Length: 337
Image (cartoon, rainbow, N blue to C red; front, top):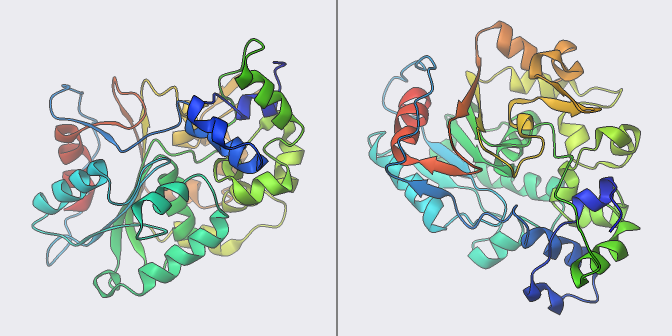
């Protein structure tokens, strides 16, 4: 298979995917499902001995801990064992705080499907409506997004934020999108399928409207195409010439924005995207050297200047490898109580 930005986007296919022959967008997602991106629930551990992040304590709320909203990642569901264990851990260490796990469907299998297929703008609008109807959330809530759930919750803050988010924590999010994937070698059925999809690519309108991961695919080598065709990521990052002032205003309303990168993450490419960094022409650009930060398109610099932006690394952890002891001390105790 020849290498290109589109080839890097369409990766790996399992035998299970053979059933999807007719619909190219579904086959496209099938390639993604069977890749290293598939995370069937958070990988939890009780004794990996991960180092603790040295971050200051958040202010203690009066009258008990606020509610917490979770948004799971790709291939996961709102009710998976991993999300349920996270929710139970939060409840037990916040004195019983109300916890809501975002879902697009109450049917867990459909909820998982929607992490791959669907228009993210429409799904986000549904989540905005759903959260607005939950009585326990009306005085505000803390929120944590796992993997792609991180940038989706940020998008909630920027576009809706009613009810408002107090502290937003993201774990391995893709805030500057994803731009590189493992390639495809040889003349096997996988590569032949990839070649058939190369003519479409991540920025094909049909793929953009249907494949969630295509909607945050950000290829800096084709930045003009990305700006023109991206239906989600370019918008929530305020990257186009016409800026949405509400996005910046809403993000600046956060008490804290907390970003964690998994130190050994090979799923999020580039890994520094979890901390709003990017890679351009092979050069790693940290968050505070990007145009998004320097020109303060979404309020990131404003939060940083005010001491309300915190960046950290989950040490010795691959994507979504979460040690519960670490999580209790560095997330729940720091930001949720």
